[in-house]
Length: 362
Figure 1 (cartoon, rainbow, N blue to C red):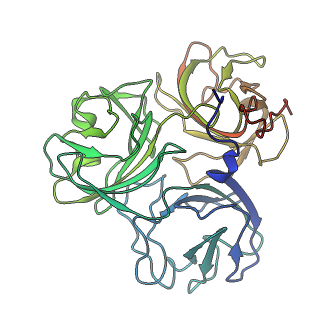
Figure 2 (figure 1 turned 135 degrees about the vertical axis):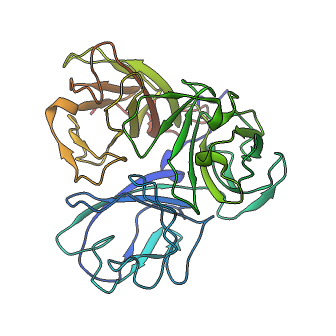
């Protein structure tokens, strides 16, 4: 039996870096047609910007949400919020348009950028498995779906299209100002995190009705963050796939010879958050910033801050997981509990066909 059904993880998730040149260029090198694009200006204080193929375009550019902000989605126009925006998704990336004041949101001169890209179904389907009918772009091979639905304000279920229970669900009300309520399997359906804030895990039945997702649906409660009546919502759902994605928790040890987290692959992307104590930012590391160990470059989804580079938050990417080398409370404080989501650069071992290429530590 194959170790992993995914031989080449970069067919489903990939990170691209570029330096802005103040032109209406095409960013290529993703390796597939992305359905969810999350990008950030690395050396500036623009917001994290999230566009997807399910919410689609506004009048002339893609509708945007900001992970560091509770605002409703920006509908997109030919100014892209005055500073430019992406206006097309291509077979290998995306292209953008100039705003009235330039390109800074996505391609400004002297700015560096990163975009994390996920592949859905490259199309949508109606899903009637839940009590609320949803519109879904589901990639069952990679365990990723984008789900759009209209809230009812009462406890309900929503079809996610994955065929297996998701381990991570990131929810946002599209049409009203609400928090980014996030479900993680390590916390269960009784607790929620907020991608836009530094809170510890919150216990309440109003987000997920104290109910874990099933193979066909996830449950939403009465909170406006997940189920605001008559308002549209978007959910990014992830199911664990051996050799490609891993969702779990760890306890920090407060030591530079830090906690090791086994994933079964060399991670390309690690999202982490302290759940036991308030005041700690979310944290994103990836294998391309800077491209070799020790990785000290971090971006904070709940903050507009520029990329932070410091040894106190460092980690090593290994052939079978990641190991913290920093002692910062945000990532590895002694006795604190953290959740993580990781996506692969390569599986740890080849599959039965011998076509996967295992990697070694950096």
